[in-house]
Amino acid sequence: MDLSYRTNYLHTYFKTSVVIPDTNEPDYTVVWLLHGYTGDSTAWSKHVYIEEIARKYNMAIIMPDGLNSFYSDSKFIPYYSFFMDEFIPKMQSILPISKDPAKNYIVGSSMGGYGALKFAFKNPDKFGKVAALSPITDIEHFRDNPKCPMAKNTFNAIFDSPENIAKNQLINIYNNRQPKLPILTLCGDTDFMHEDNVMFKNFLSIHAKGHYTWMPVEGDHSWKVWSSNIQNIFDWLS
Image 1 (cartoon, rainbow, N blue to C red):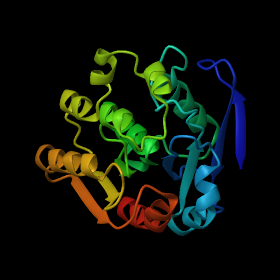
Image 2 (image 1 turned 90 degrees about the horizontal axis):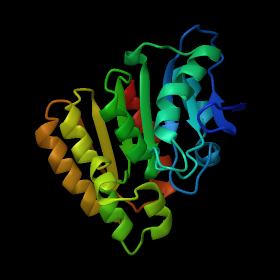
Image 3 (image 1 turned 60 degrees about the vertical axis):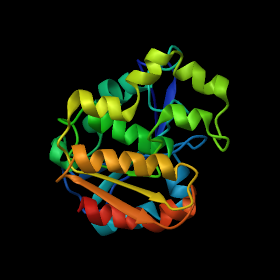
Image 4 (image 1 turned 180 degrees about the vertical axis):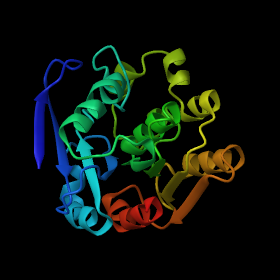
């Protein structure tokens, strides 16, 4: 189902897609599923049988609109604060989903993979596991990559200074918090961000040893990779 409500943080109507299994439980395990750049709350449902996955794993799946925000606070959209301080509590108040961090998982692809890792690294007390498919692991490298789909002026509107870029780099966020929750990342071997993902994998293999999983896969930066691997992610979450 599609939900829309007027938010206090964003001062506009916000859309999210929600799939709830039909087993009538009071507090489902929930997956917060984030999409990539140029997507919206319907992106995952357009490419994956989300209802089938929710039914198979008996999990609620919530897919918010990322508003091309990089899931970050900026002078235009305080998305990070909105998501953590308003959106999650709002969904927990109106839907039959668990508030137990151990039953809250966050997953995303591309920009959404960056967002999932960022939310989890900064709030390890709120999430039980995090998984990222082809995440943007170095935002500065992403900006400068010739294949980057995002205009530099759009990027600079979100990350508007070297200091802001530095504090939003995933490695720096991880080092600041040293989160111990289980982490999984995957990236296709021909993805334009593959080299950055391997560097990030090498970092986590050392610093998150014992609670980090790397899943090497074939393919590029596309829905073909994400749709063909999302069930592997849910198997890991389960």
